[in-house]
Length: 202
Image (cartoon, rainbow, N blue to C red; front, side, top):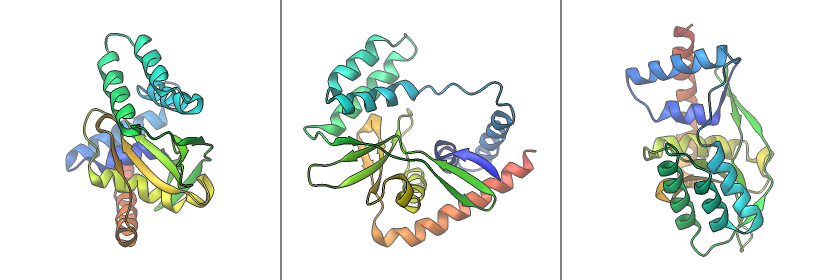
């Protein structure tokens, strides 16, 4: 069973053509060489977002993130900070604990780990995947994350709903009820295609 993160599967789904083969090849080399783990450039802003919501001090958390940024990361973190605060607006959803789960298909094991859980004032619960990269998130990429979150929701946040946020653009994505069967079938076809390229990269 090949194990990848949800972020890796999303990264694959937003690519097309031969760039998919190059992406899978790089990922296979990383997974086969765990002695040199890839640096997660966006772990720090995600942690800052979570800490800001936990304390109810979002602006202060984003300001601290920027204060600690170096010259390379500062413009990226600034865009993420501005986008997150714009997404929140005047809303102040409470931070919820979320669990982790596994989604399996065609020999592919995806580690589904929502970045945070949110509870709105009306009681709506969200299991949230944060997309922080510079390129806009296409709908297909959001749909992969939404599908896997929904199909593992009974484990990650019972009674919750799936939410993907393109943080820099303060753009939320959800999955309509009518879209779920179609997106589910497509996500499984993507998993099978990923595994075909994974095996070819051996």
